[in-house]
Image (cartoon, rainbow, N blue to C red):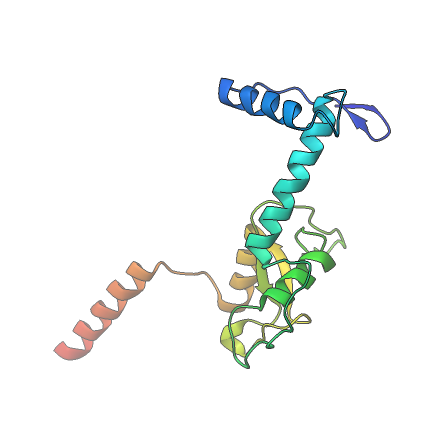
Length: 167
C-alpha cells in the first residue's frame, strides 16, 4: 500500500523460523544497521537473493568469461544472450498486442524464439525475447496451430498405421 512517493507499507505473517532468521540478521547487521530497521534488512536480504538467483538463472558473474558464442543451430541461448535479453526486456514479457499495449507480466517468463527454432530461428540476442508462458504459447499456436499432447499424437499414429496396414 503506497504511503508516499517511494514509500510503501508491507504487512505479512511469518513463521517462527523466519522470525528467528530476521532476529539473527538484525544481530549480525548491528554494526551496519544499528537501528535494526526491518525495511533495511529486508532490502539487503532481497538484494542478496536477487544476486544469487541471477547467478543461477543466467550464469551472471562480475567477470564473465569470453563467450564461446552460440553454436549455429543451437536451440538454447547462451548465458551471455540470456543476461542481455533479461536486461533489454527488463525481466518482463515483451509481447505487444495489436492495440500497441505491452504485456507487463514478470512471472513465469520464458525465452522465446522470434522465429521458431523448428523453422531455423537462431538463439541470438536479436532473435530471442522474453515472453510470459501465456504469450509464448499463443505465438507458438500462431505458427504451428493447436498443440497436441505427445500421448495423443502417438495414439493417432498407431491408429493411422493400423488403418494403412489393413488396407
